[in-house]
Amino acid sequence: MRADILESALRLFAAHGFRGTSLQDIASDVGCSKASLLYHFTNKDTILSELFAPIGQEFETLLQRLAPLQGEEAARAAVAGVVDMSLRFRRQVKILLLDVDALLDHPELPCVDDVTEALVDAMVGRVPEQEPRVAGWMALLGIFLTTARGVAIPDETMRAELTSGAFRTLGLSS
Amino acid sequence: MRADILESALRLFAAHGFRGTSLQDIASDVGCSKASLLYHFTNKDTILSELFAPIGQEFETLLQRLAPLQGEEAARAAVAGVVDMSLRFRRQVKILLLDVDALLDHPELPCVDDVTEALVDAMVGRVPEQEPRVAGWMALLGIFLTTARGVAIPDETMRAELTSGAFRTLGLSS
DNA sequence: GACAGAACTGTCCGATCGGTCAGTTATCGT
DNA sequence: ACGATAACTGACCGATCGGACAGTTCTGTC
Image 1 (spheres, rainbow over the protein chains, first blue to last red):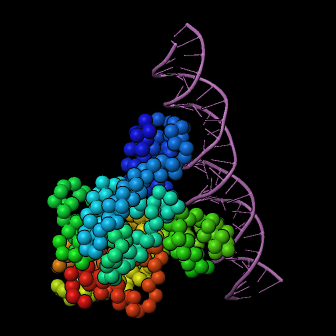
Image 2 (cartoon, each protein chain N blue to C red):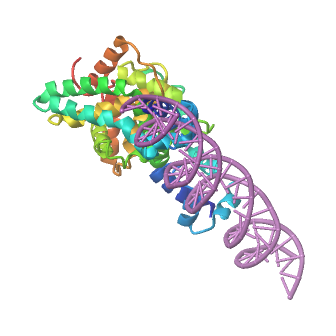
C-alpha cells in the first residue's frame, strides 16, 4: 500500500507538480481515503521526501565512485553516471522542474545553488576541470530539461546520443 | 498604481512562484488591500498575463527581424537577440521556471513544447540549421536556466561571455 | 471464539485561497 | 460647492487545502 501511494504520488507530482497535487488527488488515484495516506505517511512533505531519497543516496555513491578519478576521466565518468541516473529518475526530475521552490528546503535534495553556478559556468564555456561533482550536477540539470516535459528517451541509442551530446557540451571528444 | 502592482507581482512571482504568491502577499507588498488589486485587474491570471505580454510581443518582432536572414547569419542574430531579451526579462524567466505548468495554458507564452524539442536537439548535438525560430528558442531556454536562480549578470562583459557561450553551444565560432 | 494490533475511514477543523460586492473616500471638471 | 466618476476598502463567500482524531474493519495468533 505504501508502494501504491508512492507510485501514484510520483505520477501525479510529475504531471501537475507538488503544489498542483492534493492529498485527495493521490487518495483518489490510489483508491483509498485521504486519511489513509496520512496513516502511512506523517504528512505530504514526507511523501515527497521519500520519493527523492533514493536520488540523494545514489548521487552520494556516484560521487564516491568518482572521487579517485581526475581530469577528463573524472568528467567522463561523471557525465555518464548522471545521464544514467537522471534517465532512471525521470519523473522525480520532472517534479523538480515543475515545483522547484517547494523542494528547495528539503534536505534530501543536494544544494541547487551549486547546480546553477555550474550551469552558468558551462554556458559561458568555463568547464570545471577538477571537481567531478560540479560537472556531474551541470550535466544532471541539463538532462533535467529533456525529461521535464516528458520527452521519451526509451532506447539505448537515444541514451548514447544524449551522453555524447553532454560530452560535446563539456568540450570533450565523444 | 497598476505599475506598482505589476512590479510587486513580478518580484514576488519571481521569488516564490505564481502559486506560491497569494493576492494578499502582493497587496501587502504594494501596501493596499487585496480588493484593490482586483479593481485594477480582473483576476490573478490577468496580472500574470500582463507581465508576460511584452515578451511575446518582443519575440514576434525579433522573429520578423530574423525572417529575411538565413544560415549562420540567422542563427547568430537569433542567439544575440534572445540573449538580450532573456537578460532583460530575467524575472519573467524565473517565474517560468518556478511554476511551469501553471503557465502552459497562457496564450501569451509561445509554445513551450517547441522549446523543449529544440533543446533536446541541441543537447543531442543536432543543431537546427534552417529555422532561426528554433535556434532562438533553444538559446532562450538555455539562458532561462542561468537567470532562474537569480544569478547576477549585470555587466556587458558577462553578457558578451554568455553570448559567445551560446554561440559555442550552437556549434558556431565566436 | 477472543483478543490485539495494524489498516483504514468519515468527519470535522482551522487556515487560506481567489473572488464578489456594497459602501466609503479621493479626485476633478464645472 | 457640488455632482460624477474613479479609486479603494472591509467584510464576506464558497471552495479547497493539509491535517487531526475517534471510531470501524481487517488480519493474524493463541
